[in-house]
Length: 117
Image (cartoon, rainbow, N blue to C red; front, side, top):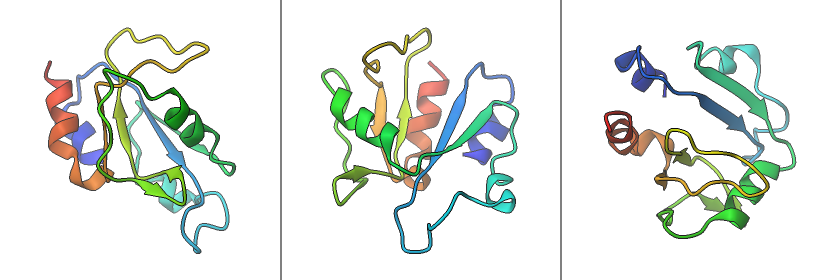
């Protein structure tokens, strides 16, 4: 994600990086050195111990949002990138994403294609 942001320094966007415990090594919130991997000023990072956002994203998924080809572990979404259109409003229900897939490291081109629209 940091490389994408570096390649688009003037893009008007906001990145929410949500960390959640998925692997046996994820026993606590990410340490400072992990958070430092996303140092761009447009990034806000959160620890979601209870998978609340992942659960909400799964519950609110609907057409025309694409279905992910990955990213489910024991019924919890993870390592997923979601891109929402400019002006999308987050209210009682999440807006439909225009890109919803992962793992994040493998969908760089799909993310970047949304930034150039």
